[in-house]
Image (tube, rainbow, N blue to C red):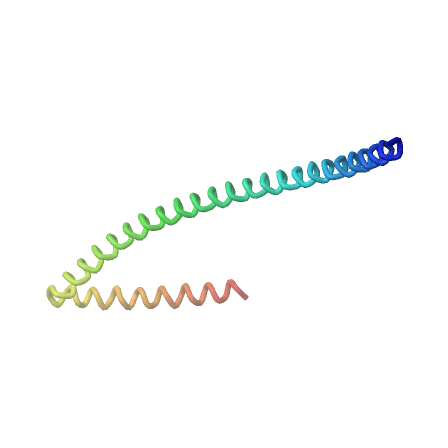
Length: 116
């Protein structure tokens, strides 16, 4: 009987040591998991904030494009009205077009010169 009690004590001590090691390992792994979950939560919040910022930026771009579209459609209407009217307006239109082409080439020359 004494031999059996000694074996149980040894098994109990070894079992206790194994349980302690498993408990330490579980605590370490749970802390590691908690760290990873915290990191993932932070990443998810950053992604959400970035998505909201991009949506806000796209909404503002949409309103800007709508205002530019309105401006261009008004300009096209005025241009069409000017081309349909008399000969004097056509002459003015030719002068304005030639002037814009000259300004474009001057700006092109200045930009290419500034880059070198």
